[in-house]
Amino acid sequence: MLYNSTRNSELKVSAAQAITQGISVEGGLFVPEELPKLNDADFEQLIDKSYVERAIVILAKFLTDFSDVEIRYCAENAYTDKKFKSNHIAELSCLLDGTYMLELWHGPTCAFKDMALQILPYLLTTSAKKVAKGKKIVILVATSGDTGKAALEGFKDVPDTQILVFYPEDGVSAMQKRQMTTQEGKNVAVSAIEGNFDDAQTGVKQIFTDPKIVAKLAENNMMFSSANSINWGRLLPQIVYYISTYCELVKDEEIAMGDLVNVVVPTGNFGNILAAYYAKKMGVPIGKLICASNANNVLTDFIKTGTYNKIRDFHTTISPSMDILISSNLERLLYDLCGRDDKKITEWFRQLGETGRYTVDAHVMEKLSESFFAGCCDDEQTKETIKKIFDQYSYLCDTHTAVAVKVAQDYKQETGDDRKMIIVSTASPYKFAPSVLSAVAGQAAEDDYEQLDQLEELSKLEIPKALADLKDKEVRFTGSVKKENMEQVVLAMLGLA
Ligand SMILES: *Cc1c(COP(=O)(O)O)cnc(C)c1O
Image 1 (cartoon, rainbow, N blue to C red):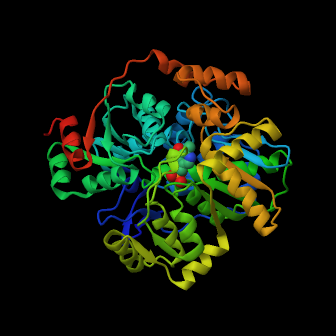
Image 2: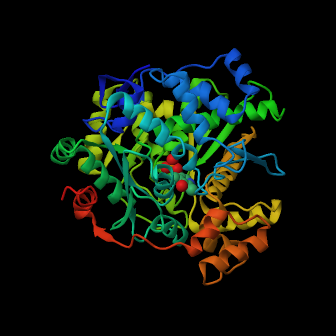
């Protein structure tokens, strides 16, 4: 299987090349030429397997330039109960009303990003061996909070890699910040930027594609790659859990093979929900894909109207990992919906860069509405939802997941569609303890670690060890830079300044 760029359909690269490079030279994103289709026999075979074995089968369909041994090596090292709570990897919890909560946060950093970032370092180093022999891979990350930590944890002390994470100074939770600034490892660095996530992401994309910097790295036998969901190696592992979860529900006789289920995803950069769309296209019986946003509801408006308009106020919310106005992966969806018309995509994204907006044509709009529904809620509604779900079902969800729960309820009410729903739960409530506590108990202790105890008492859920242990860790990274100066930080870290 080969991969095209969303801005150049003529381009054809191998999976290893796409994963190593991260983003295409003209700024487009890599997508598979064609999605493999799963038939009845494939599903039958997958249903009886474990998560890791399902992952191996699915990855092999996309990574045709990897050997079976390499794929097994990547999957088995990532998806073990040494790193995740159990061999289920993607845990399912069923609420009393029949809703399935797909808990993707039982990995080492307590957010769903681990599902992809535990395996990405293996995929990337295996890829780099094929296409970039001997080069050091420099991973630049822009994070709204969770990707940064998950990427640091995945790449720490991985030979021949170096990782640098930028996070918005005032845009992450106290726990997220502490997770990053205490990161251990010899090849890691972390810097705050004075700006929001979009500034960080735009800055990183600019550095990636700046010919001068790229040449400087090449002279020193280094190359950039990305651990953000613009990298195909991030998206692919996310497709796995949608396929696996459907199989798991069939295996548990919760649904019959072929039953349609709706999937609700709390969305920021559009990576997670795009993976669900790809799973649907591959043949997983998914009905509607429900895109849930917080007060930064640029996607809600887009899905309802067909006009993407990023010129609007940026809100700092209690679900910071979704505080995004430029959702990168939407580009991949639109490329698919417009029939892989690279000219159209290039034009729309040129308009987005220059005017802050673009409008898709009626045909794309029609296809978009066929598969997607969108809704949003504000912080007040998010908190009300956390409380309501806790009171009704003794189930505690984090601030991001609560946005999805609220939009799921709104969707049911608005459409009367009562198909079974999978709500994607993207973070442990402990990661956002102050907001969760204020929602359910009305108040939170001052101290970050007392908050964890308070939440444990209330919920009877065990505090994740990774978070409790932060208390005794030394803060290693305290720097903050202006967004214009990100480039200098990168060069300084690499010793090229
Ligand atoms: C990253 C993140 C999201 C948004 O996921 P996207 O793939 O960017 O849409 C939602 N919730 C949490 C907790 C996250 O960390």
